[in-house]
Image (cartoon, rainbow, N blue to C red; front, side, top):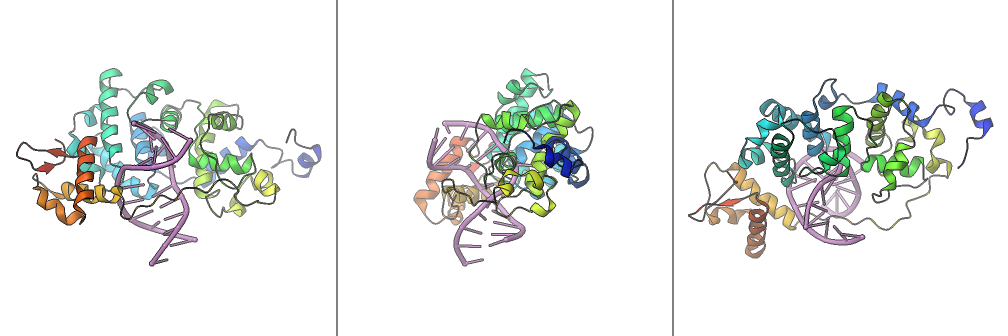
Length: 304
DNA sequence: CAATCGTGGGA
DNA sequence: TTCCCAAGATT
């Protein structure tokens, strides 16, 4: 675990002798997906929008919505002037619609506090609604080209295997940032690409469950493989149920309101869910979240 | 810290 | 069919 044995370097000087970071950057150059927000010159606002949309939502579903959003609201100030209802409808079925509201609130904050310019400072980014540890660094790094350790679930899984020899990612820790920073290339521009590269490796090769080690550029130095690919031994990961939960009911209710062009009576929401108690509780929570609004005459609609 | 918050595709 | 899970954040 301390230093690379000299004999290993001699056996394969062109591969094992290279730093992990450089190997991954070179691998990324040939294996990366062609995603629109990665196009050279993509501005930080567009990157920020992509990062929020990608929180817990697969790339495939994000792509078309991201294109629509950037065409419609090319700058933060544009989104800041949109109504919550417009934003919630444009969010479509990406899921977790509170993200849409927070993204709009972030746009307002960027417009008011930062003159419409997405900040490059991590602390300032983290102060924005809906922007946490991961997203702040992703925007600084991918949007502004700033050298930053970026840790998401993919990176935690890659580090867990490659560095710590464990089968799956551990829960997020502060040390994750130093773990990955230790592997980054010295050159700043390459370090930025390294951050995307690790995520890409986790997304395409070092996937959860059964990784495609045959396609991995660093499988020869992976601590997990070298340890004989031991099975996951951590605590059982909690299974998030969906059917029958408030999340499903909220989704159904919002679905009705997204489709309605006018405020609807409470009766119009009945078909969305049988259980009146749960339906009522969920409607209330949507009101509290600001995802639904009640008109003076008692009808319901998306917040104007 | 653990629970909560949508949705849909694939193993 | 059932279960897993996908660039997290918030409370």
